[in-house]
Amino acid sequence: MKKLQILGAGCPKCKKLAEAVEEAAKSLNIDYELTKVTDINEIIGFGVMSTPALVIDGNVKVSGRVPTMDEIKKLLA
Image (cartoon, rainbow, N blue to C red; front, top):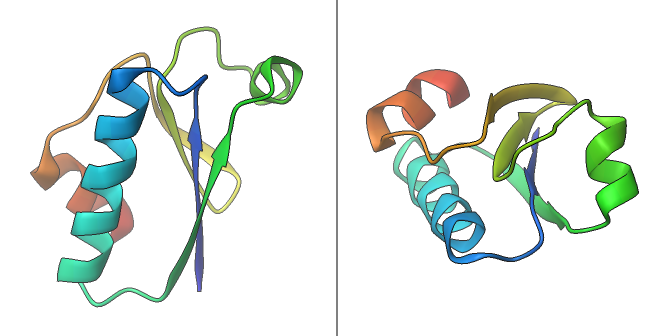
């Protein structure tokens, strides 16, 4: 099971990233758990200075932007 985390305070871009990640994971039939991290100290703990960010299995993969659906699928595969 992949552990997916969206880092961000709940801004529109954060919500867009969360929706895109869920859509990509479902289309790839990936078993996943998605959590949203909104605590600023926890976000900084990942070393992320700009949100939204995507964390896959504890590793920051994208930060400061919403990646394309193709990018997300490649990161999840």
